[in-house]
Image (cartoon, rainbow, N blue to C red; front, side, top):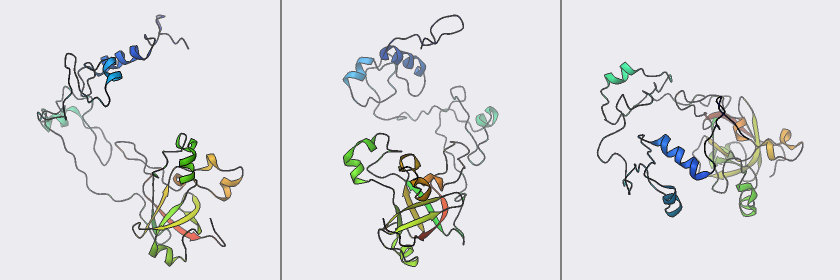
Length: 252
């Protein structure tokens, strides 16, 4: 694509993967993940090389921090951390007041509970996760006939007592509804904790037959909330309040 700097030099001054790796080595120099002692030939020859391995070293440590020296010195840190509840940045002065000086820094925060707890209108807790057969949205595992056969479509799991309370049997088609969306899927009655509903997040409108997504939505995250952790920015996809109802004449 011939991207160039303002002075006309190439934006990336390398021609192949080995050149790119050397640039990464330079970027890691002096940092906790120092790769400068891991050559490109090492990558070809070995498997699972541990870091750091600094320039001039031929072996990697068995584990980190065995010398009880942690990368917490104020002049070494790239960030002084954040308040775990608000996400606000910790300033240099506050950080130095903790006397980090190579010590391990462990933070704790009060338990705040789920962002959206169950209530009388949405009495069950919804959570999402993976199937052993698929990864994310199946862009790769969906190409494997064996994996598709093992887990071809979305399902939801209910505890036996929750299913019985709603007159739902194994394999019945149900509707799971939150304040934001709905999911339609067959039920698996499992040993899941009572009060909890599980659905895998591998499926969705993107692979539904034409016109089917509206009538039988399968995207688990349509039910989850648009919030995130203030520090990591990780979306809150693991907890929401829902209700579950059997569909009339519903069968998978």
